[in-house]
Image 1 (spheres, one colour):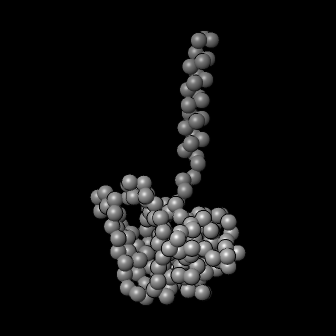
Image 2 (cartoon, one colour):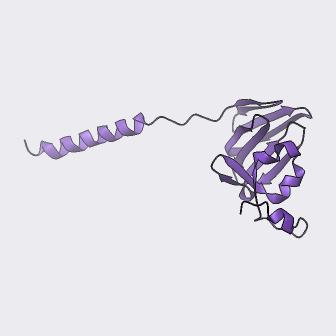
Image 3 (cartoon, one colour):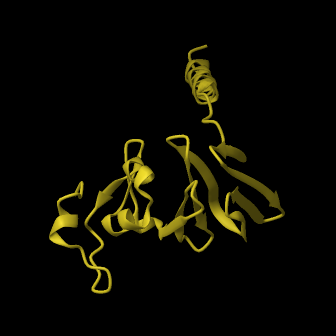
Length: 159
């Protein structure tokens, strides 16, 4: 009778472990369509390829790629649409689309995230229309000879 005790304990432990893992709620998938003010993002998948389109005042921008993850859409302040994705080669990208029809894009290694806010290179601030600049924080880690960081700009950096 005592020889059944270890077997029973293992079976019960396995059942308890399976229930614990199954009882965790799965995080919701990123939206496949997102409206953000005057901007709209849509994505679809055809075989291994992901297709996504961002529509706005300046027209439509459609991209296709075989991705490791994404595209992931987010709406900032009800006006700025961001798109993040990682290629199968492991390169991550970030694009921000603005209601005025402009957009900026960076490799993900140049973008930080602090809590719910994106932190962009300080050089991006001048390329963003004034009403949308406060939607982001800025860093001074990307100092390039062709796009230097002035002392005035440096004072506005989070780090």
